[in-house]
Amino acid sequence: MREHYAANAEIYKARAQDAYRDNPGAVKSRSRIWATANPERRREIVHASARRRHQLDPERRREIWRRRNAAIKKGVALYAFTSADVAAKIAYWGHACWVCRVPYQAIDHVKPLAKGGPHMLANLRPICTSCNTRKLDRWPLP
Image 1: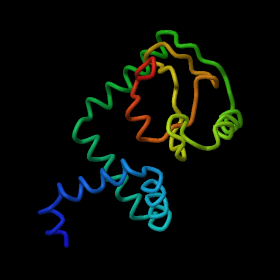
Image 2 (image 1 turned 90 degrees about the vertical axis):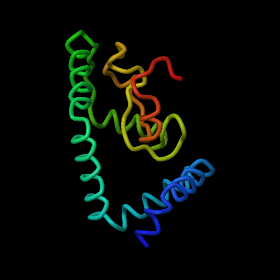
Image 3 (image 1 turned 135 degrees about the horizontal axis):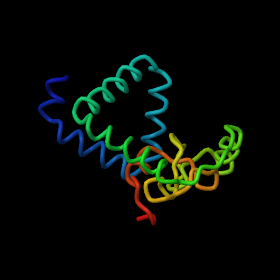
């Protein structure tokens, strides 16, 4: 089966993209169900993927951290808040991505730190990985 998939990878990739485009919520739901049922396999995949990303472009990862630290040193406004405050903010958004309304996977600075946004509760919102990847550090929103 692996040989068949490898030989027809483009077809399978196009099908997966079509399915996601037609119903992203269902695809994400199936992914979460699989991840819950296969925690060890998921952990292997996630760690392997992170290692590959880091090995492929470690300089890019360092640059991201340099920019973030530079923004903080440059005087980005930092305001104290607790994890309970963040949990309340997530509950306010219904535990869903503030852009597409699927279950959230990360916390986003709406106005990025790199663009002078403050690190404060009012600038934080729950976001899914795909929306966060699409948004990057852009402001105003695309």
